[in-house]
Image (cartoon, rainbow, N blue to C red):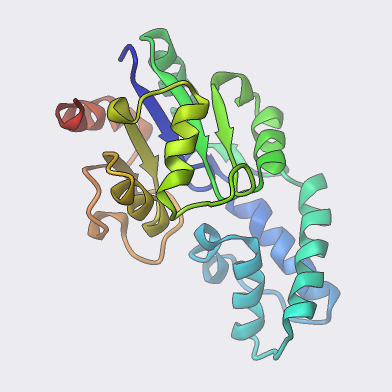
Length: 225
């Protein structure tokens, strides 16, 4: 794996953040007298970001809102989420062992997420994972963010990696689309947050758990130059 850069999405790929994201969204709704939504209704919205989750909740409850009201609710979400970012969020099973094994074999690790960089760092720090990564590229790290390919390519460069020797790992249509646009092989994970099953999105390989990661990686490595 020497000189290989592995770039991971965060929510739904590295960490199961759904419980805390859903709680924060429902906190915002309830604080405005709106009935909270069941977790399964909001889970598939996570890959589109917190603002989208709030909007989806409002639409589901038939609430008409302005962009200014949505901005205000998003700020309330951030205030709550920042102090409750890792209450129930946990790394997916086998993740740490997989990352440590990759590092031991000479790989570089990076994160490419549409979560704000400061929140991403805070979450990973609280879970004891931050030190494993060479680079964290959040939604606000560059002028563009996923699905723009330069977000992924920028993450690779931040890690001092080479795009020709990089693989993306993600759970959603956004991740797969970003990787394809950047011409980077992509491994899809089935345990994340997506409205469309990741197997239908056309990734180069798919895993149901991190116990399958090595096999999937060996499948995509021949695509690298």
